[in-house]
Image (cartoon, rainbow, N blue to C red):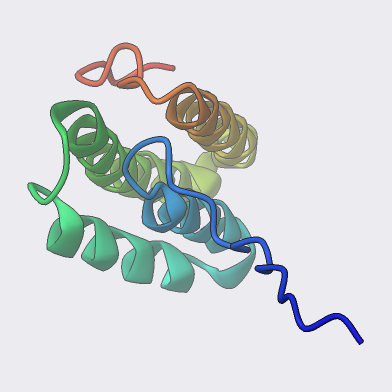
Length: 125
């Protein structure tokens, strides 16, 4: 018998940068807020506030982007809710949902490229 032991490969590869799992979870929670009436969005923004300032600058910009996305979407959804009294709010609500999806997808794409999102300070997309 051969008593030589071959080492098993290490299943954990060294990371290529900071862990981006938490920001992706926050983006998913923001998107899930569409279906949960904002409950998961609230959880996501709390997570973003907790993790803000604990990573590189480009990652902190994502947390800032997520926090702004939450507050801006809250304003937009409240405005749409008020305007449902004159029926235009339903169209505005749909526009806010599209805005939120686009903003989160842009953030996820920038996160995968390990760069800050574009136009963090804008109220638009």
